[in-house]
Image (cartoon, rainbow, N blue to C red; front, side, top):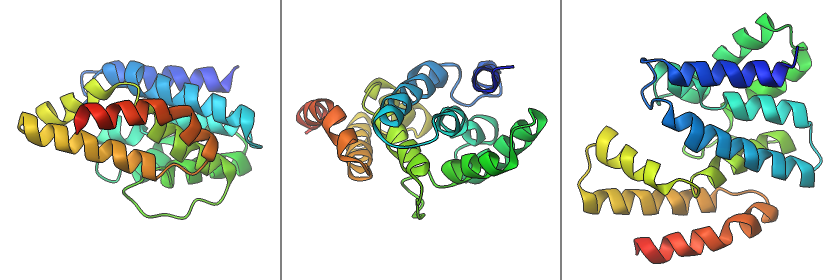
Length: 185
C-alpha cells in the first residue's frame, strides 16, 4: 500500500462529495498546487518527504468536511483517525498533526520543524497559482462587492507573502507576487 496515494485519494474523494463547501475545484486548484510546492521545497530543505506529502494533502481536510472555522484543529483530528486506520507510525503521525495544526497564517502558532514550515510555505505559495479561486471565495462565499473582493484578494496575497518562512519560497513566487500586486493595486 502506498500511504501517500491512499491519503491523496481520500482527500480527492472528500472534495468530490456534495457536502464539500468548495467543491472539487479546491482539489485541483489548491491541494495539487500546494503539494507541488511542498515537493519542491522538501527537495531543497532537509525534511521528511513522506510526512510533508501526507501533511500537505491533509492540511485543509477539516475545511472540506466541517468548514473553514478551526479547520486546522478538525483537520488534525481527521488526519489522526485516517492515519491510524492506515496503521501509520505514531511518531510520524504526531508530526503530520503538528504540520496541520500549525499551517494557518491567521492563527499565530509556533512552527518548529522544517516539515511544519514547509507546509506553511506551500499553502501560502498555492494562493498565487489560482487567484480566480480567491475571487470566487470573496464574491460567492463571502458575498463581497467587486471592489471589496479585489481588496480582500490583495490583502490575502500580501499576507501569504508575509508569512513565507524560507527565502527559497520567496524567490520561487516573487514574479507572481509582483505581478499580482501590480494588477490588484
